[in-house]
Structures are given as C-alpha cells and as structure tokens.
Length: 116
Image 1 (cartoon, rainbow, N blue to C red):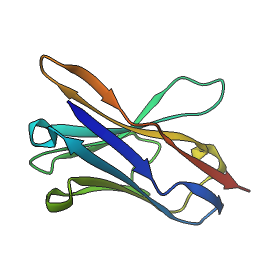
Image 2 (image 1 turned 45 degrees about the horizontal axis):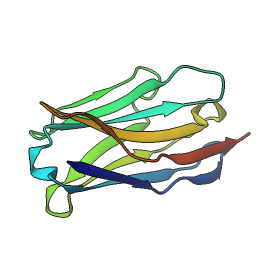
Image 3 (image 1 turned 30 degrees about the vertical axis):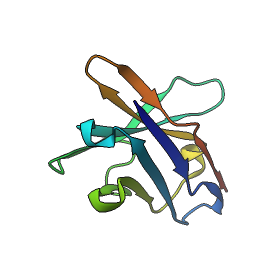
C-alpha cells in the first residue's frame, strides 16, 4: 500500500506563487506516476499535472506555462510549483497514484485559495 500526504496550500493573492508537496510512503517504490488533481466547490475534479518515474510530464491546458510538476526520488516527494496564480485556481488539490492490483490512492488534499 501507499500513503500520500499533501502540504503547502494556503491563501495567496492573484499573481502569487505556492509550492505544493506530495510525500509518498509505504510501497512508494511501486509508484510509476503521480498526478495532481484539483476540485473546486460545485465543479468536477480536474487533472492538473502528471509526472512519471522517468520524468515525463503532462499538464492541463489551463495551467501550462504557469505550473511545474517535479519529483525528488530521494525524498519520495512530488512537487507542484504554481506561479501566476489566478482566482480560478482556487480549489482543493489532491495527489493520486494507481498501483496495478491495488487500485487508486489519494491524499487528503490541501486547500489553495487565490484572492483577486
């Protein structure tokens, strides 16, 4: 099994930056990729960014050029650097992964609020 713990959320003004962290523990060596999702009240969950073990990244169009996903394998941690934040980025952010034979794993989420 895997445990995922997010941190780094908070309140920031539009145009500001935050860095989210997703720390993995347990059978983290089995993780092939980690994805950041977000969900705003009354809206569907949205994929934000994904990073594979090999470092391949993928971003939602809405965050391209503003967000950067990275990983520190020594720390079993994935980061989401968010720059030029907009009020529409306000949401609860979750990291997630999938292990074959075990299913999806999710963290508890971290709230990001961007004020205008």
